Length: 299
Ligand code: ARG
Image 1: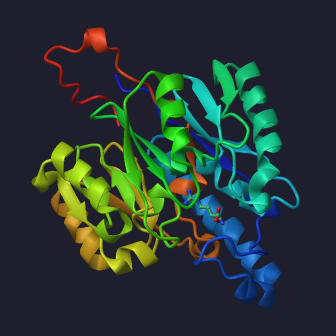
Image 2 (image 1 turned 30 degrees about the vertical axis):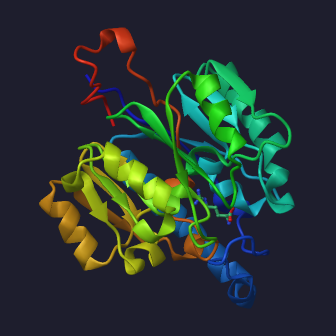
């Protein structure tokens, strides 16, 4: 009875790499052939859209805006659960203009009945959406980062707004500036993650909560190819073309990997997950859960 996943993507017409707010961004390279890269970005975005549709998702495409190239990463726009959207406050001035643009877009989604409520983090409380607050459908909590982009105070706000548990995952470096670059819960309960990205406290917390056989360590290469930044729907994992090793690790666990060529977006520090935002994530009411373990929710 699993409903179709609803995924927001943003049209890439206005995408470019013109500034550098994370160490993966390559404005100099982009400047050598903006038209060529923009055409390649269109092809890549279309390929992702097609793969998600084939994986059984409904994809909704929102318009970007000139001067806001990183709108193509709607994972940073908001956290959405149970039809309620909590909109981001961006750390860097280069992205702060997205707040008003996404507010208008989310209000329109609400008017269409795709969302029930739209709220914002308080002014000055930095938080960059589902890129830094990842819903774990099996465990029914948010893994939420603080560090380069989202503030520590944002975590209490997330749990207050959604009434859900928030497990802090502090990030140590600018390379993993969002949690989704280095951390990906899968539908079977596994977590694909890059250990050096997390503080000792975060690692301890993770290992106390998730059994060792459910933790899949990503390598430096997996990270650099943006393959950890994946969209998992059922047993399919849509990701920027991964190294063979990661592909076989996931195959052995019963997942089908759908590789997509996303290099134009990797020049901005993004992969498949951050080019999407799930609008249909739902919590399982506590009362409907038998023995205290809310397993096998949809993912
Ligand atoms: N250039 C964008 C930035 O630095 C990339 C965002 C990618 N999003 C993500 N959730 N990882 O903000």
